[in-house]
Image (cartoon, rainbow, N blue to C red; front, side, top):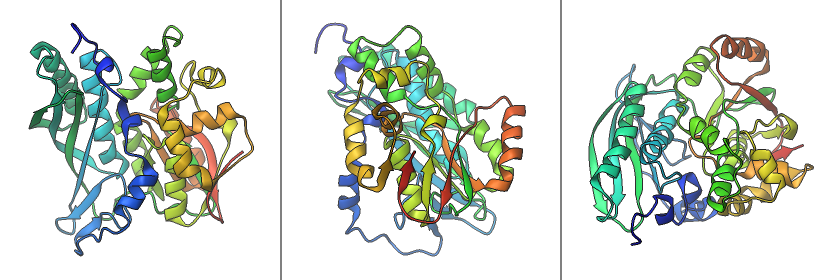
Length: 341
């Protein structure tokens, strides 16, 4: 190990861009037969952002796990981003997190103070989510990795899945896109001033407040946009809901400098893997830069929401009154696949 290494220099890929390729994951799980249980409300058939198990008529457990290599060199920011990303899976299911356990892998040579900063960043975010960081498990590894296993609760009748979108639904995003583009440019030394700070701020923002504002509207389908990019997650929502999602490329929100970086040709390894997965199901008539933004792997991204169009105006006003970002990006129609126009 080099003397005084940075966190990102020890990572082969950072954040959700390190996800196992979705196309290979589908093949891997194709022959897996999940255990049958009347109380397993959400499992692998079909899979979603988290598993949900019913305890009784009023309560169900939401359980998820997520971890990845560093996306930034600041250890406290890395811990906060990793924690945000894991906790957001619970919010994407309509739930509230209760308890989290750390999952950590670190080289022994890293200073204990640095590792303490990672844990401290995570603990601050977990507390902000209304949950408790109660322990965890740490192993030795040449490549640092950190994340959380999270348990939350949801009412059995209030579960949000990605399989309920209906023709006529309006589609919304709650965060801008482009974290992968900005992080890649930062590694390449081409990120403009301020771009990384804006991306880190977005990645450290929990989807807690967005989910709370959305909850009274009983959305038809929700998922959080992470490593498979907007188009990968939109394809999952479309295929599992039996609808076609039409996305307006000009309405897609971008982090500061992210679209310009896409125009300049910046790409991540996750871009190629996301195209391999969702590309055959996406019809596109837009520029390469708009496609790159839509395929870009996100870390701790926002919610992709489908709900009846007649609720759109009130939802928009509710988010605006709460000072929360909300972007109308398309609609669901009859058909299959995804259209980026």
